Length: 83
Length: 152
Image 1 (tube, chains in turn red, green):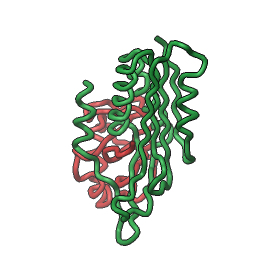
Image 2 (cartoon, chains in turn blue, orange; image 1 turned 90 degrees about the horizontal axis):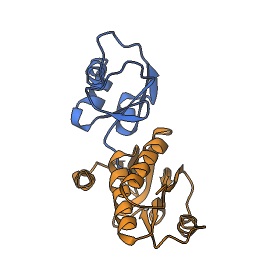
Image 3 (tube, chains in turn brown, green; image 1 turned 45 degrees about the horizontal axis):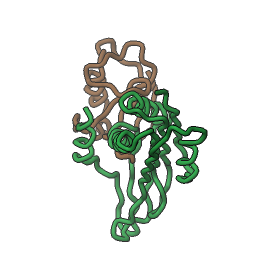
Image 4 (cartoon, helix red, strand yellow; image 1 turned 90 degrees about the vertical axis):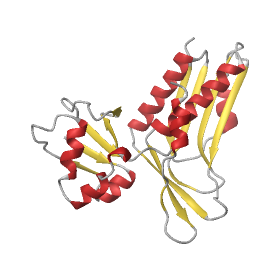
C-alpha cells in the first residue's frame, strides 16, 4: 500500500512517501496508525498524539474506524492550516 | 440551480477582479457577487514568508467537494475557490473565494461557509519563515474548528 506524509508528519518520519506491506491484522485506519507507531522512533515521534493526526484514504478524509480494504493510497498528516 | 464551480490550486497569483467578473459573466439573474481574499500578514514585521504545502490531487478534490456542498445548500449561481501553494510573502494573496447569487444572503453565507470549511478540511499546511530565528508549522486553531462546526 502506498503511504504519503505531509507537513510535520513528513518531516518527523523523514520521507514524503513509501510503499509498505501491511500485516493481515491491520484492517482499519486506527490499526494502521498503531502499527506505524511501532516501526521506529521517527514514526513514534510523528504519531505520538493521535488527536493531532488526520488520515485520508484515496483523497477522502477518513475516521479511525474506516476500513483499508481496497484502498490504494493512504495519507497521514496533521490538522490542516490553509486558507 | 446548477452552479458554475471553478476550483484552482496554483503556485502563481490570481486576479480577483477578473474572477469576480467571470463568476457573473453572461447572466442577468445575478444580484450579488461576494469575494473574499485571504492575504499573508507580516505578523508585526517578523515574518519573511509563508510556505504552503499541499496534497496534490486531494486538495483539488476536497475543494470541489466543499464547493458542491455550498451549491447544494445555497441558491448560488457560481462558486470559485483558488488556493495558492509554495512560498508566499507578506502582502501577497493566499486564497480567493467568489460566490454569486440572485440575493446577497446566499452569496455572503456561502462564501463564509466555503472559507470556514476549507480552513479545516482542505489539505494545506502553513510553515512560517521568520526574518530571524527558527520558524515552524502553524498550529491549527480551535476557533477554526468551531467556525466550521456552526454550519453543521
